[in-house]
Image (cartoon, rainbow, N blue to C red; front, side, top):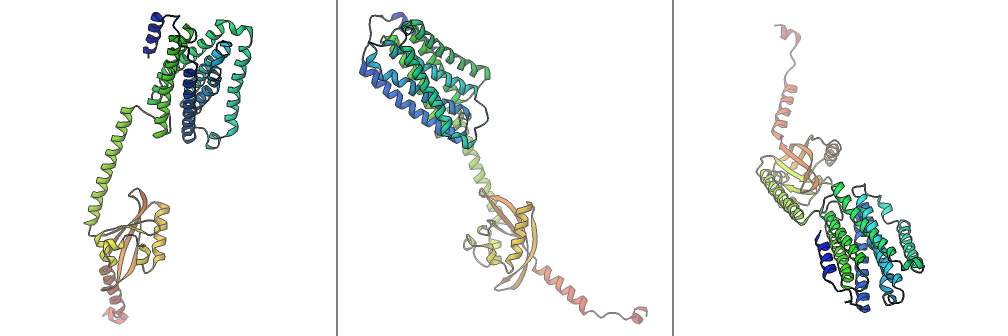
Length: 400
């Protein structure tokens, strides 16, 4: 961060004050480009603020918007710089004060709770700030017409205030120990802005130092704009944007977790396929997502044919399934029931089904564990018939 100051010191020591580069068209073109970029950065910051609601992003958007509204007269009045130098120069100094003030406020608000969704796009709130910025334009225009405008200390005071605000922002980052990739970008931008204000304090208009001051401010401007674009393309959150290394590390960790998850899912599927118990996974509505071979045999179709069909269609009494499924979803506990099902070759068969609510392939689903209990039902029925057929002993026979 000391490199900009070293560059300012070098130019200040070696420059020849009589050498100037007074090129109005070049200054107007550079100003126009900076205004377009600042409005674009304000729009990006606003989009991120609308998504995350972070107060920091609101004030960063206002910093770029405020710069555009205050710096625009500085460019428009370029050709009047010879006749009305203070009207020309004071707008540049005022724009740097506005940027420093909004960025300092952004850092002080960092970490606060997100703003409510309804208030993020409230036109009235934004128009109030625009009106305040336009008041700054009006004040500068009035002051530039007063006799005091010709005193160098006025411009130096504005540049000193901008320098102080930038240094206060850097101090806020250090004292609050704010750390993230985006915060690092703000710190670099503030350092460049501070060096720019220091350079403006050391020189008059159109000298090499004056142009260097513009270049330093533009460099900080681009650093902060680049960070905003990264925020917009990734998290839309200024607080969670990390450094490039951190982002790559997070992406690698996420990819590793995804691979592990897919591997675990494949292992579970293989276990399900080899299970002697029928296993069917369906949506709560009944649409079948998975069916192992044993359950496909129970249904009398292939596992591939079962996919996409509704599990209710295979029940003789679908209402019984609906009641069990509703209870499983409501309580979160497994629910079991014994249900009859017709089989083409074996006639009526009985199955004990346990439904459990699970997450399958990232969605809510029901896993039905099905066990054939037809033999037990037949045995229970035979025992009941035997008890009914057995003769009831008479009282006298029992005593004999």
